[in-house]
Image (cartoon, rainbow, N blue to C red; front, side):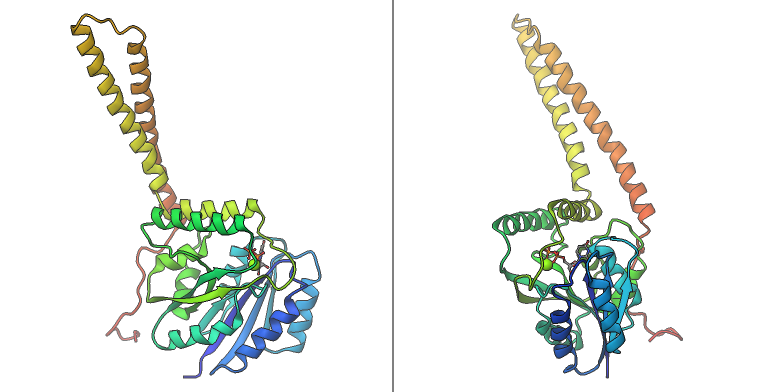
Length: 311
Ligand code: UDP
Ligand code: MG
């Protein structure tokens, strides 16, 4: 087999790193056992990124460049790359060399051994602030719990996926995209590859807190209905509490104690419980509407054997 590798590189204001990134990627890819294409996606950069990409595309036949008309976000840039990638194996890697290109051949080995998704899992993160490390660690724990362990911890978008997996992702038109969750969700044979995440080569992060929070929320709300269940459980809890209070008040009444304002308090707890439970019920329907409108595939076929046009 002489495979074609596609490497997707989302770029937003990355003029300071692009030449180095291209050099490192080319060094690695030219020594692999197949041909390759590097797809740079310029996500509406306002610096010299588009010019640099034009030059690279003109001087290197392995380079493809997709220019967005405006900034659409990292996840959309990767999505566009996936749509255009022709490869048998497709690699997603950040432009800033935090994900070392030298790991790609190891990923390819695992792919050739039968894994369809090889995701990079970070052993340690260099050069990132304590704040980022702590919030990332807490977030991944919550996400892992919310999704029943489906989304692996300490995993970003750096990964190699088989063509078949990319085809499935191309058929998932959801707008709130959390690709690492989508890849976890589709199944297939997945394997982790541990690596050390480096410092950013140059420039600074384009993930300010606001973008990070949006991504974090997409991860939770697109892959878990647990937040909704909390509302229902809270409502049920309050109704139960109101029942206990009522029982206590009745016993006190029998013993000759009037209870005073506590009757009102009990009523309020009970009614709040009813309202929250009702919200939970409404939420369940909204979750179903969400599920329908998102248009995810109903099932994902990894192989179909014995059909005339099948393999
Ligand atoms: N990126 C992008 N669009 C954006 C923000 C970031 O395409 O709106 C790209 C960026 O060029 C880089 C990758 O996404 O290749 C990861 O971004 P960054 O390194 O800034 O995030 P961090 O590693 O700090 O989380
Ligand atoms: Mg980075």
